[in-house]
Length: 255
Image (cartoon, rainbow, N blue to C red; front, side, top):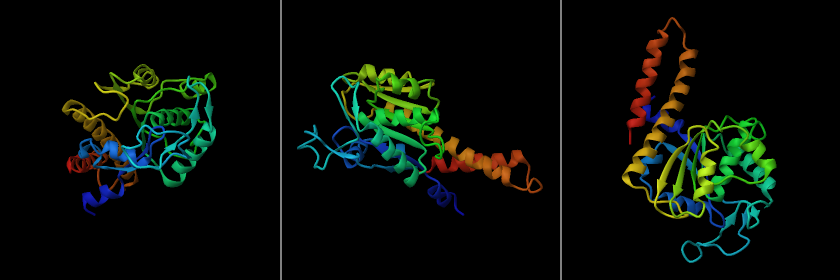
């Protein structure tokens, strides 16, 4: 089998959760302004929120409806309506449509994504799904009620994470607080507000580096399994490992 064919069969998958009162299609459009090489080796899934928008959307006149929301909340973001139903819905989606290697989210979608990863790490949800390995959070924040915080953010979340934080974002401080809930978070700052930002050359290179590292790690884990399944008489462990590394590098460098 050609390396390219094998690569296409085992692309890493990312579930992408949109912001409040927008849609999966809108998030896909937002991300389209990023360099396509960032996610060239990933499959991205853009579902719509569970509930139709319960009020005016900020993107009316900019992007066509319908618009959706994942759950509802009060002004202080301390009371949530339909959150448990939303979590159950997403867990069912992830289990039935997955597996997914990582989550990406903007605003409400990022907040939810981080919650799911934290909950999974504590054994509360997705017990039969492989550990979600990474998060890309754009303008995300933490939930604020003690019953959620004491579980989801009980310990530093070990999943690899990248956090986009806008200098003019009204969620700048909450986004920094969310990043602090992760072990060794990567923070990419931008001068814009509450939006999926356009990336300058430095941010693009940083994100490409992160996604490449994820691909290499994933391919090496797959290669490790292959190596362990080989007949030891066929080749040495080190030779087999070197072969997998070479395949990995070839695949990642493809465009």
